[in-house]
Image (cartoon, rainbow, N blue to C red):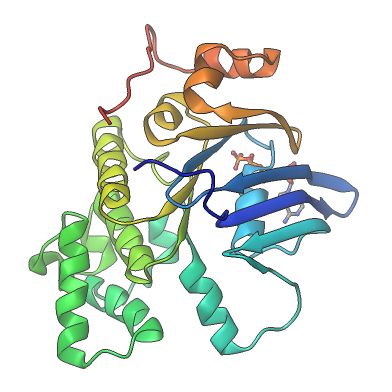
Length: 267
Ligand SMILES: Nc1ncnc2c1ncn2[C@@H]1O[C@H](COP(=O)(O)OP(=O)(O)OP(=O)(O)O)[C@@H](O)[C@H]1O
C-alpha cells in the first residue's frame, strides 16, 4: 500500500522520554506514522524498543513528551471504559510470546469473539461468523476455532494473536518482536500475512525488531535506536543500503545470515 504524506499522521510522537528511576530507557524520541505506513523500530537489546512500544499503546506513561494517536492527544490518568475501548480501536499490540497473552483455557474462536464483543454490537451468530472469517484471514480454519492455545503451534498462536488484534479494526498495529521466536519459514508466512492484511485494509504497522532482514521485508521507514535515543531514521531501503551512522552499519553487519541481501516482496 502506498502512503500519502499529506494524510494526517495516525501517530505523532514528540520528544518521548521514559525514565525508570535513575535509568533513562527512552530519550527524546520523535516520529510520525502515516496512514498505511509500516515503520520499523530497530536496535540492539536494551535500546528502548519495547519501552517505546509500551508507551505507544498506553502500557507505560511517558515521563516527558507528547503522543497523539489519530489526532487526539493521549493523556495520562484515569480514562472511562468508553475511552479505553476507543483507544483500543486506534492502536493494538501483538507481543513476542502470544502464549503468555492468550488465556490458556479459552478456545481460539472465543478469543476472537471476545475481542469482537468488546467493540461491535453483533448478534451471537454474526459474531461467530465474523470470528471465523478473521481466523480464515490469518490462515486458520473452523477446526482451529475449537482448539485451546496449547493445541496450536507457535506460529498458529501468533496468528490467533494477530486475528484478535485485527478483529478490533485498529488504525495502527504495534508488533513487538512478533516473529522473533518463530523459525524462519513460519516467520516468512507471518510477514506475508501482515503484508496481505495491509494490502486489503488501511492499517499502519509499528514493527519492533532487532532483525534487519525482517525489517527490510516489512517496513517502508525505520527508526534506529541506541541507548534510548534515535540515531538514524528514514526510508528503510536507503537506511540499510547506505547507513549513515556507524551504529546502523554495525547492526547491519551483525545480521546473522551469511551472504544476506535485502529482498523485498514485489510491490
Ligand atoms: N520496568 C522497568 N524497570 C526498570 N528498567 C526498565 C524497565 N523496562 C525497561 N527497563 C530498562 O530500559 C532499557 C530499555 O529496555 P527495553 O526493554 O525497552 O529495550 P529493548 O530494546 O526492547 O530490548 P530487548 O530487545 O532486549 O527487548 C533497558 O536498560 C531496561 O533494563
